[in-house]
Amino acid sequence: MKLNAATEMIPITWPAFSDIHPFAPVEQAQGYVELLGELEAALCRITGYDAVSLQPNAGSQGELAGLLAISRYHASRGDQERNVCLIPDSAHGTNAASAVMAGMRVVVVATDDAGNVDLVDLRNKATEHSGELAAAMVTYPSTHGVFEEGIGELSRIVHDNGGQLYVDGANLNALVGVAKPGWFGGDVSHLNLHKTFCIPHGGGGPGVGPVAARSHLAPFLPGHRFSPRDSGAADRHHR
Ligand SMILES: *Cc1c(COP(=O)(O)O)cnc(C)c1O
Image 1 (cartoon, rainbow, N blue to C red):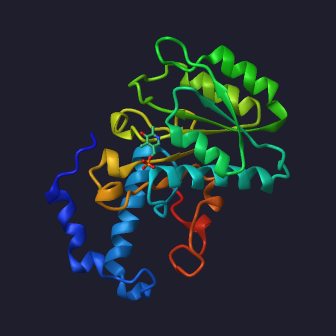
Image 2: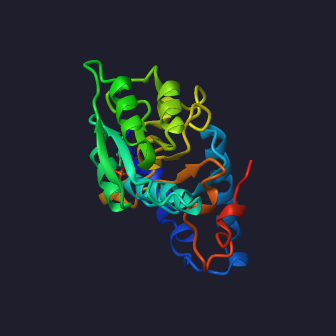
């Protein structure tokens, strides 16, 4: 899953890919525009989400961007007090770190012996924090290889208590062509393309952790005000 063959990485050293200035005029970067547009469309298609930002350069950056989108969405509705993030104790360490960086308060949810999120504990904590629930973050399938059978119910509990569901998409390759996080209850996910689709990782090159979301979160995804392509994040990729 996480093997990047040298032959797959060499092309990014080609000057045509690596020498372009990030703020080159769009008319001089048409190849890039096409490449990025096709990638965004493909990622929407396999995840079931409506919009994607390719900006984050790691899964952890995608998590921060996705959680900030959730915070800003709540704030846009006058729900500033929603800052609790439910995270199972089986989660990757970056989940809790990102939630804290996004200004959220982490409440840990138990997992059972088989590695499943304990839905009774999740329901209790979601209800207890109902007025301040911002999000729950779950990895699907989990890092233990568990496809949570209760994911649909988990999503209903979180949404019924006013929260948004962040589905950590680090293990997305196990789902492609079978299920889509945007369809089984997720509102936003990051995708670790450097893990699941052989794009260089960490010390071997930048990661690629696009963040994908349903349409209500799309206006809050990262863009760049100097990039004509990104000037209206909300206009990007609705399908
Ligand atoms: C690797 C991983 C992350 C973090 O991604 P980075 O690109 O290393 O920042 C988050 N969640 C899970 C489940 C992971 O496996």
